[in-house]
Length: 343
Image 1: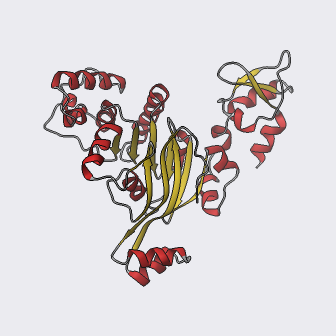
Image 2: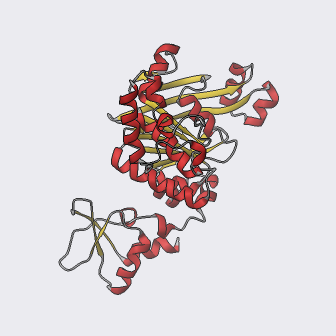
Image 3: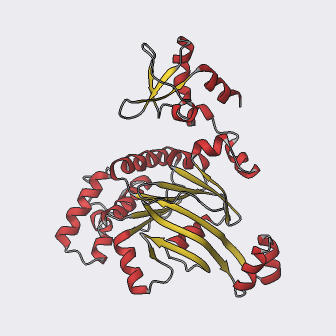
């Protein structure tokens, strides 16, 4: 599936990326292009297709989530996109620069200055203080100690770890250790952040806190993020857009509202069927054109449909939907909400 989201502010462009594990990669790609399944290609060639002709773009400041179950290819994809793994075919461009053809020295500089990664396993150095763990990327860049410690202290404060800089990782909880990993990623002021299931090993409450923390940081810092998860609820909470991945390909790319209200395949429909629509969809998702009328109550575009119900029950008149600047952008009435809840 291709992605028609490209514009002048595109940060990352992925075109026709393949990753095939095995020796007969050309034969495997040819068979896959003929329509053979993963299992058929494996039987015929001994090759496993991890990523199959994937294309998408990520806009600057966007959180793009790739959601899939185990074996879907999502972690292989992010390793290809971040160039931790070589691709078999395809193009990966960051700010228009082709990553797949860069030599190791140039790629190393791009990784040091433009990219950061946060993994499920924190990868902290147990023998080094929290401040030194947070400053590690800057240390690799050759930044003087006083300067890198000052920056590390700044980002530790941003992620809520002010006062813990002299602790060792093992003295911190799992959630706090993940915050150290996040601080380390932010310290180098990266252009793009790659997250590979960073919160999946955390307890549910800590996981929710980390999701909220990431949303807060993204609202304040507006980084470009590619986030991998197997949890659809996490995907719709964090993602501006979501790609549903299965067997190495994207089944559908869209906003949470688009996936929930218009699933493109049965596979996507299975993920969305149990999602409480009223808790996820917003006034912007169900509004229709119309202007503001005197005395009508105003609601925000981001208000959930669930939160609109009491007002609509109290007053039969439509609600005026306003954007962040207070400008009326549409109306929500009982009919729109009733249609959604009955769907």
